[in-house]
Length: 219
Image (tube, rainbow, N blue to C red; front, side, top):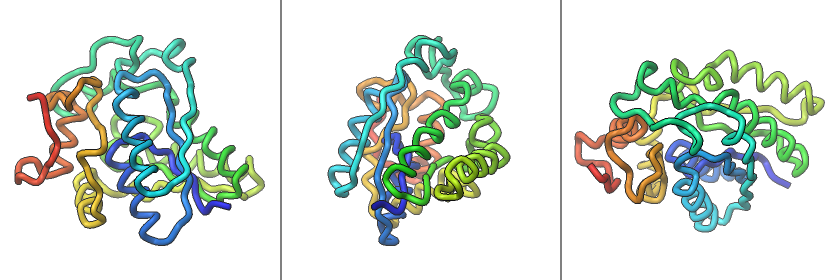
C-alpha cells in the first residue's frame, strides 16, 4: 500500500516534491512518462536514479502517440525550442496540448490500483500563465474529476501551486536535493544549454546569480 503516487519527470520540481514527501514519512511510488519530448532521454535516467537512490518504486509509461499526434516545440516532431526569457511569449510554443490532463488521468488510475489516496504534481505558480493545464482552475477541475471518478478514493494534490521556482529551489537545497542529478533543459543536449527559457528559469530558481547553482551549462 502506498500513500501517494508522484508524477516524477526527473526535473527539479518533482525531485524536490518527492524528497519533501519522503521527509514527512510518506510512502510514495513514482510514475514517469516517455511521451516523445526532446529531453525525455535526459530526464528519465535522472528520474530512475533519484528513485533508486531514495528506494522509491518507479515505473516508466510510454506514450508515443503524443509525439505522433500532437503539435509542440517540446516534442521531437516539433520545431526548435525557443531561446530567451521564460515568459508566455517565448514559451507558448512548448505547450503540449492537454499533457497534464493525460498524465494525471493515468496516475490517478495507477494510484487507485495501488491503494494510494493522493496523486502529487509539482507544477508551480510560474507555470500558470504559460501552461493552461497548470492553472489553479484546471488543477481544481482535475482533482474534482479524480475524486468523482474514483468514488472519492483518490485526490490530486499540487503542493507547490502557490510557490515560485526559486522557493522550490530553496526548499530542495534545505532537503539536500542533488540538483546536478535533475534535468530541466528542453533542448536535450549533453549539458543544459543555458540559453533556452527552461534553463533561464532554472538559473533563477537555483540562484545562479549568487553562485549557488551547481548545474554545468554549455553556455
